[in-house]
Length: 192
Image (cartoon, rainbow, N blue to C red; front, side):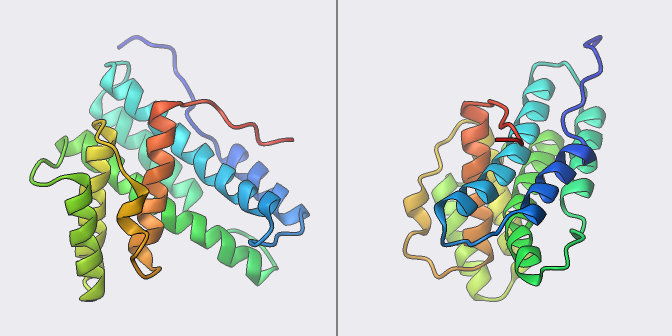
């Protein structure tokens, strides 16, 4: 494990995205605004995918992978310093989607792949848990689905198309970003 020290993600990178959001008129109904928010989410998912890949390739060990994931999580999930409440809510939506990306990745590194059900079955169970207001269980099941995605099982977004919008739909949205990042970890430039 003598790979050169790589920075997977930085606070500066996250701040660049937030500065961009701060400077722009954001309308979630507008395609460019929606793309900016999705790029923000995908950029973080790509960094997470790179950590997982480095771990799987034995470039970093479990402790390093967990530390890197914790570092990114701390940066990304901290409250943004915006005066605009609408923008805070939009960033919060991205952060909520990414919560499951972090949990899934940490679970994958620490415990491997959850193998008691398929991605779809885990998502269905998570939806049921959310309906029962057992959010910890819903997140745990969503993270299990995420470990399957990391392991290469396909997440079909139709699994949530009839599900009422809520935390599980947000988390699955994050897993979709992670799935894309794992299949094509191309860096998204944070400037146009």
